[in-house]
Length: 417
Length: 131
Image 1 (cartoon, rainbow over the protein chains, first blue to last red):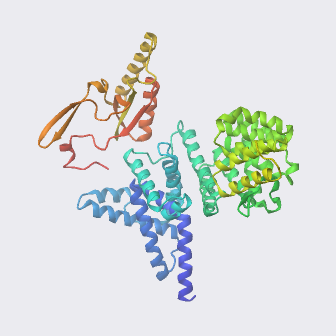
Image 2: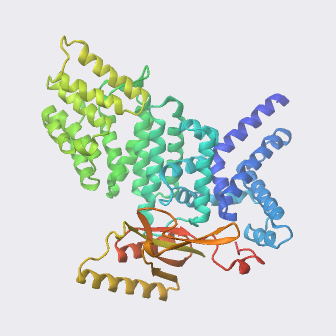
Image 3: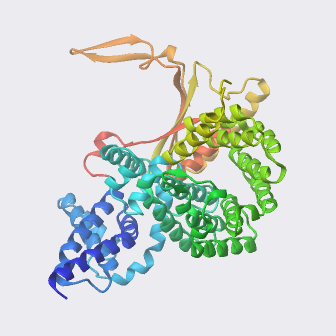
């Protein structure tokens, strides 16, 4: 191999190890030193050293273990300098497993550290946007710059957000451990919702698509670490089944409805994997909101055409979901499924019941527009789509909704309402 | 070990959720007495109390070598601190467990804030915290 080729290969290897090992390394170091900023800085430094060293000496047999060991030694150096002759170094060194032991094999045992870190990052005492940013930064290894671009804020605003979140963890003494059994359902819900938010942030907006992959990667890790949590399995199934269809949701910058999506382009591998998980969930018999939403997606993925969709089964799952999670949004989605069986009038009556709660939710207005149009009430439909357009959050949705308004108003000679 | 302030607030002089009938007051007192006994037994209780309203407060300010006092609260606001507990806890989750009990007993919201330091400053200087 030429030297240039070796450099390129080393750079690739650093990038690969970075993706795979960043979260593990940070989690391990937080476990040893109890300080997130120290852990982050040390892991960053270790990757910088790796980039130089590996190009010169070649890639070590266990790159991830090398990173953890190097970062740990680095952190001890930092503490030693800060301690200025105090005995802190000795305390830390003993806490760090005698400090100098080069023990790359230890990396296999860090999975618990990552789980602890997920629960720390998603602690409900932190506000949601801080949970999301921290999870992506510490476990996903995204840079501040990448995060800023994904969430459409400046780099300094994102840096401030992360500093603030880390400050609260330290000041309020948010623990670094898996919650006890009594707290676990609540805390797990918070973790799952952060991962789902990350995924949804990656939908629709072209600049953020990498967040989808990141959410799936983190959700896979979570399932690996908590194989007995049915809702964690439900989340990964939901993400896989959404991802299978994601590329067909937008065409030419505009949203494509489920009925118009090119089902031939749905990713069968992801669907098969997602469906297998849904079936395993059903056998387990401990349903929850994520599992049920995944099951609904599975029914859609199973239909060869929109017309062949088993709407009775979908409504039955929505009934179950409504019982577990009686939110207006679930009621709205159930009404949309009911429309396919009982028609637009029945759906509108159901939507009217939740409309006041969803006055600012664009999809409620879009659904009303769709059903009003089916009933021939074109003016009312146009104004519903217009309201939906004004409330929509993404360009793809705005484009689609504007097209509906256009189509409803252009053919009408007198469009006064 | 950390220490936390658990503060209740009065909104325009009224504590939301406070008991209004003698029966409610009786129940309220019983639950607070039970809570404080539990805190004491668990060595969680450091200090606590309820405060007079902002009309009773005096602000004392250093000004050009003198000390000036004025009538009234430091911040003009609808909301004023009405009472508080200071508790010992292992970490935030432990503190939250107690916060849960306090909120259940008092039936109104509290704000929980960690102390940055609790010893006397003089005790604090020679040796740093045991972190």
